[in-house]
Structure formats: C-alpha cells, structure tokens
Image (cartoon, rainbow, N blue to C red; front, side):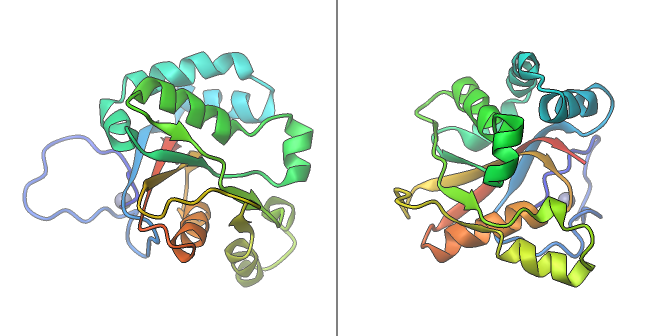
Length: 191
Ligand SMILES: [Zn+2]
C-alpha cells in the first residue's frame, strides 16, 4: 500500500511494517527510490535551494523505475498542491514539476491536471498539538475552482516524498468525495 521498496524474494505473506496503521484512501502507492543518500540531497536541492536544474536527474530516476512508469501511464497525474503563500515564496510547486517529468517519461497520454488546492498551510503549524495538526491536514485540501473532474478516469496523486502517507491520504479523500473512483499515488522517493 505504501509503496516502500524492498529487496529480495518474498515467500508467503509479507506485511510491510510501514503499512501497519496506514488506512489508505487511495489504492496503491509506488515510488522511484528510497529517500536517502543522493536522492535525499536531490529532493532537498529541488525543494529548498531552487534546484530546478535537478529535474533532469529526477527524470533519469523515473526512467530507471519502469514499475513506476507502468503505474502512472495513461492516468491523470494530480500534483499535491502547495499553499499559495508557499508557492509564491518558492516560485514553483516541485510536485507539479515532478508530475510533468513523470508524464513525459511515461508517455501514453499521461496528463497532468492540477485539480487540488491547499487552503491551510499546515507546515507552519508546528506549534499546534498532534491532534490539531491532523484535523487541519484533513481540511487542508479542496478541489480547485472549476477543476474538470472525470470520475471514471484513473487519477494518480504525485508528491516528492512519501513519509507517513497522511498528506496523500488527505488529498485522495478530496478526490474520492468528489466521485473519483480510482486514486493511486506516485512519489519520487519514500522516506
Ligand atoms: Zn508499506
């Protein structure tokens, strides 16, 4: 469910320890890489150091992850939105840029549709307690005004890093409540 990559051969049932306690509002999550080493540096450069030149490396990572390209091909990719204040500060939404790279690498009529908007800047709410933050995250996302919905199309939420899944879960819930039948998740890295 969480898409955490693992190595080796699975014999019998295997329960992913990172999926324990995860109640996904989406179907399946897949990721290109672990969030560690050079990939961690890549994500931090892209997000916090205006590293737009790093998108070429992200595209190369996607190219090296055929399971991820198969996962998204033909779907509507929906970037996890930034709060407008954050978007202005950064100048771009890295998840939207990653979605574009992913769509190009996957080909096959994969599109990027920014259907969601972020109403609450949850990252600035560190002073709130856990419960409050969780409640805020639930209400943080909404459909973008005039978002063209096609409920029968498969939608794949795109984010830079999958950590606990709470962000993509909140986004998936908005799409599901709007009538979208199938929502999956794709990320560059898994923390
Ligand atoms: Zn898992």
